[in-house]
Length: 113
Image (cartoon, rainbow, N blue to C red):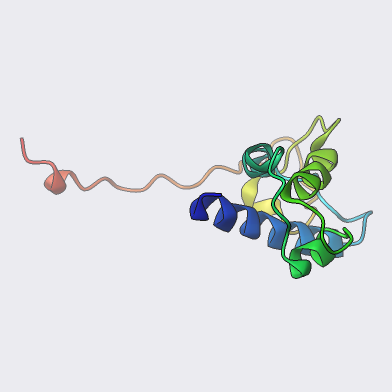
C-alpha cells in the first residue's frame, strides 16, 4: 500500500470519529471527500491498525476494505453534501446565505511578462 494512501485514509478515519461523536440530530451529512480514500481502499485486504478499527466501530483484525465499506455506507443515499467549513456542525442557514470565500487579491509579480 502506498504511504500517501494510508495517510489519507488515516485522516478520513479521524474525521469519521469526530463526525460520529456529534449527536445524530445535529450531525451534518457525511462529507463527499471521503469517497476517494474509501474507493482507494475498497479492495485492500491489509489489516487496519486496532485504533482505526475502534474508531470505525469494527472488530480488531478488520481489513481496510471493511473500513472503506463503513465510510461508503455513510455516504450512500445522501442527496445533500455539507460545505467543508460546515462539516463539524450543522448550521441552520437561509437559502440566500452566501457561503463563498472572499476574493483574494492576486500577485502577478510571481509571473514576469
